[in-house]
Image (cartoon, rainbow, N blue to C red):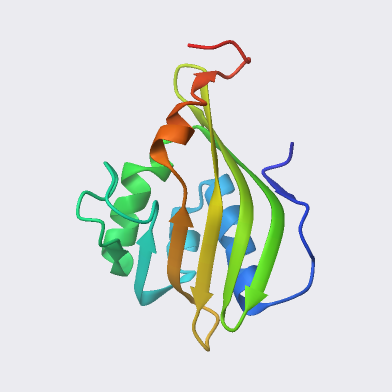
Length: 150
């Protein structure tokens, strides 16, 4: 599988384009390139609501918090593979449906199914990234990367 497997519509849309750039930067470990895709006052809710990643459930606001989010989450993953099976655009937003496969230290893998919603401003920068996925469901897929269970 390539780092970003896109099986959804190829119809151009500013939010869809931004989402694809975001996935590409994450899969390549390009932190500053990724942060630059976000407006200075952008917010990331990944996952939406309270979680160990975001105990307040209020999201990560602004570039400094987005960099801290990267360091706490993205930087801990050895490899990302995005599998987008559908994408629906409307207004200045897109909702991508798919699975994020994360390869973790210790030869572990976890698959996170969800709906990933990106909203962009007039300048094409991401103003909001809301990832709807369930921690328990994702953790339930945790296994050895070679396919055996833990």
